[in-house]
Length: 208
Image 1: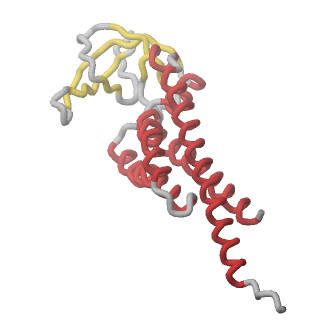
Image 2: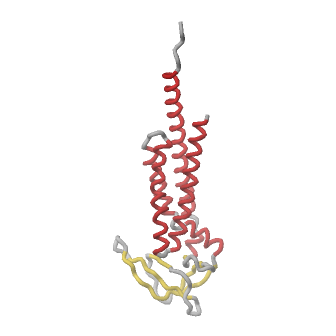
Image 3: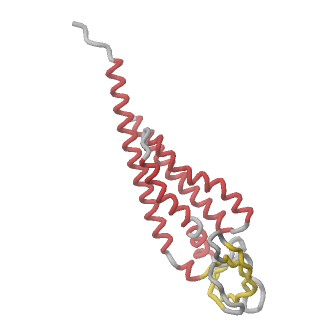
């Protein structure tokens, strides 16, 4: 019973740690500056390494780790969108923005990641960076959500209102949790079996 309890504590700790790392990565990545990306590098590495804990939880089985990698990668991608959208949906202010200057940073795929300067209707720049792979014409208007505290950059209103990534996050985390639970069950049974075998080997024989 104690061994089973310890196994489920390990599973719960892994899931809680994964959720915290997901949130930290999301907040740091959403801020967008190179400094925060540098800060996010450590929790991102820890997030990717987290499925390896299933090897010990399952008492030496490798398949839970490899199966958990797919939902973990999905969670890593949604972390860059969902926490920021939650915050902007709750605390953000809708605004009409006018596209100003833009600079292009070429990605590894050869595409442009545009960094836009957005203006309000009075011509004053909105705080924060707005980046997109879509090219918008200077002077065109778009509906955005801005952060009144100036922590996060503007986001497209349609992206903030959408809950597609939230659904994907819930599904991915549910799969991740199921794999972790399966690893816990396998590990607890294997350890109990090994403990039982050791007890039989060390038990003194009956005297005749």
